[in-house]
Image (cartoon, rainbow, N blue to C red):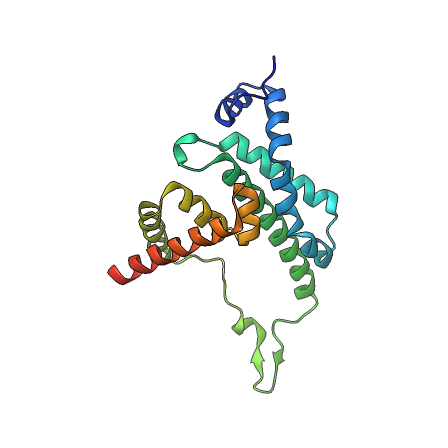
Length: 200
């Protein structure tokens, strides 16, 4: 059976039923996204001493995550969802590798010793950045909900990719739009978000 002419949502359904051919078709169709996102992390790989092949494997796992958890009712195109999942997976891998590297460096520094001209104790100057303020989290969720309500579906896709750290050129390539079209969409998004801030 030839699945090449099937729409993405049907291919995703076939994948959920265990169809490997459908997965291969989506992989071939969206491999350019995996490669585009991965290219953003090459410098990080070099800086952290990570193997490119290991990181590319993480990108492929992000692609698999996207196919496994994609739901049509989320109002997100599969291409956008794949981009975000691959990007998130690579971010986590880099953060994990960076944390390990810093932990190794910190092991060789005494936390009890005083540093600098003011004699600051290193242990006293370290704050836990991983603790999330619940109020701050609530405000972010509320703001995200208001933004999603105000943006059109296509604007919301561009907004998600922008928040994922993608440039206008990368978004144009992922969304298969012209750069001018993406820039115009970004201008509309900024105006709508500005209006949200003014009213609140």
